[in-house]
Amino acid sequence: MRTQSTSHRLSRTTVASCLTIGLAACLTSSPVTAASWLVHDASAFATAAAALQPGDEIVLADGTWTDARLLLKGQGTAAAPIVLRAQTPGKVILSGASDLRLAGSYLQVSNLVFRNGYTPGDAVVAFRESSKAVASHSRVTGLVIDDYSNPDGSDQDYWVSLYGSNNRLDHSQLRGKTNAGPTVVVVRDAVQGLDNQHRIDHNWFGPRPALGVNGGETIRVGTSDTSLSDSNSTVENNWFEGCDGETEIVSNKSGGNTFRGNVFYRSAGALTLRHGNGNRVIDNLFLGDDKAGTGGVRIINADQTVSNNYFERLAGSSNRSALAVMDAQANPPLSGYAPVVNATISRNTFVDVAKISFGVGHDEAKGIVVAASNSHFSGNLIVNRTSKNPPNAASSLAGIAFSNNVQSPQASSVFPGGVSSANIALQLAASGLWVPATALPAIGADPALAMTPREQTGVDWYPKVGEVALSRTSTGVDR
Image: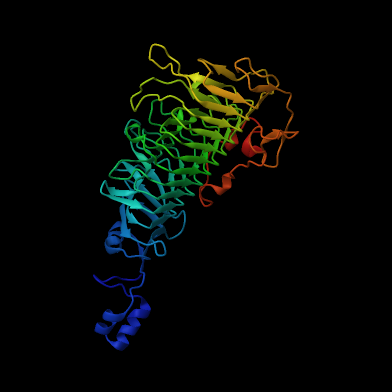
């Protein structure tokens, strides 16, 4: 274990040189070198963390850390980040009333496990110390949070809260949250950051049971009060497995975000563009396995793009339809329903889904009567190999231009045109997804669209206890 004085950090090589040339000369001329500490308790951690410098590393010793409240704070650099890691992945368990906060820049945390307890604060892992001390350019990877829930289901907390900008949560797995509050949340305000540019990728979000009320999201990006500004964050290549917390598996409440390459497997809910404009939902897979309540994408607000996605065996309806295009209020408050304007819904494939719904939420009494306008539904493929005919509309479709779409075996009378009838035979591609046996140029999702492998999400040293064993069809991972 290396030690640190109040003003200089000395490596073993530097100490040996000091004995030869004299301490005074050494302190004047020696370069500062990175230090590494192996710490065994919270007190030793606090000592090591008191004055961290670029390149420094704190290693938590293997074992169970009970009621450990850790703050990693400092200013690293891109070339020399400040590191906090487990001595051995999976062998450092934070339990009881433990939590972790990050503040500063270029901080990296890896391979910690939280279980057998719940956070004593508002988050298990927070990218901030306070509203005026947030993290930026920082990364948490290999994090496991397993059934670390407050036993009082109404007591709200987050498992990971991202503040600041340019932070990343990746290759982590979070499973079993049972109390109120999103599992992962991007918190936005003028003080703690609006142009976030966060990245949430390659995580495995395991089963979350239905909460019964709002507040059971797996990811929420922003809130309604700041939703007209852009977060510019990316959520990509994650698995959402059995995420049944509420209707909004992902609740987008800001603009400029990208949701790409994610797999939603047997999750009862939908990716919901609740507030904010100019978001992109591209290259995602929604695999329902005919599980009740499984949905796809719900569209609200302006300039949304839903393109090159694959939807299969989704059993949900209304807000949980494979595609739900909402009606809106004419002059909504920030927390209301803003009109769908200039939406692009293109090159998506729908296989054996229960519902594709337009005018969702239409309610004369509540003033939710404004249908989508200046929008486009083009190049989509709808195939049902059962008697189901999924399209339905509760309001006018005059504001949506339909073109170059195909429905098999018969185009629904709901559509005003722009949808051709055809008998489409499907075959399994190497990806495990259904594609037309005969190519349909510019129709449906790209036949080369592939699933983010489950084993490439989360960590490989901790089990994924999910819903794969419950599969009742040949959907997704069982192929």
